[in-house]
Image (cartoon, rainbow, N blue to C red; front, top):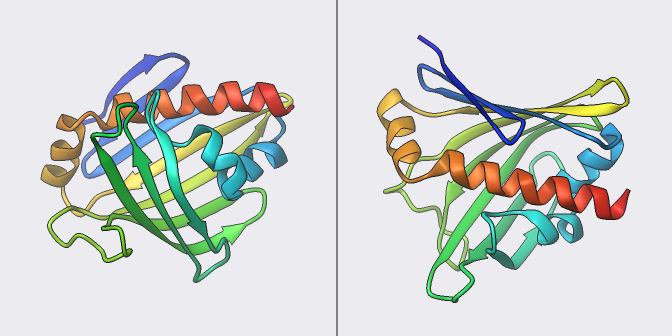
Length: 168
């Protein structure tokens, strides 16, 4: 059974072990793709409100990786992540697996990984961005929802929207 809600023009849908975020950005698809694939862009918007990217090492190609660290405004919390790119079709799609990691980029085996498919669709001169996140189980998805994943994505995409307006 699907659950859905709309907040800040983002639609969130839960279907089994899948979480789907959809949002329309007032920017050309090529620019949105660049904002998702260029470390300079990502450093300006990735992460929850007021959090910053303090480490941002990216090799954006199929088989490449992205290692990053998000830091809370007070510096007390750091969240390390590492992504492995599986498929890149510019400017339509990015498929990658995302994991929690440590400072050296070692995957945290105690935290779940997520397979992400980002699809960018031209939509009336704007870009419809669909983030399809597939989890290993419904319980895994529920645990990340309980950790505030929807709020984090909403805040991050709010920052992306502001960033796109600035660079457009």
